[in-house]
Image (cartoon, rainbow, N blue to C red):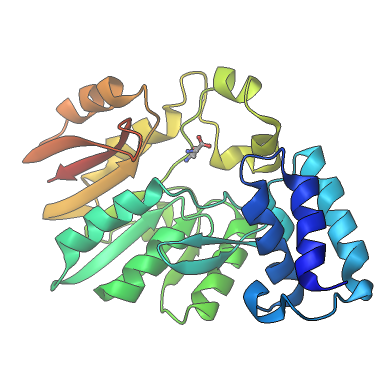
Length: 270
Ligand code: GLN
């Protein structure tokens, strides 16, 4: 049997899944470390079969595909992920895009809160000039983020702590955050895949806004005048976020949408 024939078998097993046909190819590439097209005509390595069987069992139990293969692409880069960190989501790429457009050509100090896998901080450090700091409460997340920083060859100061606590007294030109923003109610009815991700990266109290509110309450103390603040939030939270922002002194406050046209992140100039 060739890898091509094995692929047909695997794709058939996965075909009920939304993205099963692609997943079959990605799984082969993750297990072999080779491009599927380069091995398609070559004999299947029987010794790898148990790894595919194990992956199938895990996927059908609901373990997210990204944890099974151990990585997720974000903004064109491959990020290592595991149970301790949120899987980077494509909608967050739009927040990154906004930061890159604004920050292009500037020399800046940037801070990323709730960094998780480090995806936002790392892409910014790849494309912008300056000094980059990223914070997370979770030591597990930070160790993955640090590893991603090394794999992708960027210099980021990784700090463990609660929101701004590790950067007390410092000022930044750019502050980004993808905090937890699901409500307890949403989490109670979420798809099984989500229960594999760290709840501290997802859930923020009864209305999901607990962490967003704390960030908005403190962000002005750390953001330079004319600096940019970008924060992701949930699709129903736009009005509440704008209300919170009224308490501060901002030159510009906008809600930006995601690929599905849903409210997704705050764009604010101090
Ligand atoms: N967008 C994620 C989801 O709905 C939530 C991420 C977050 O809380 N920051 O699965």
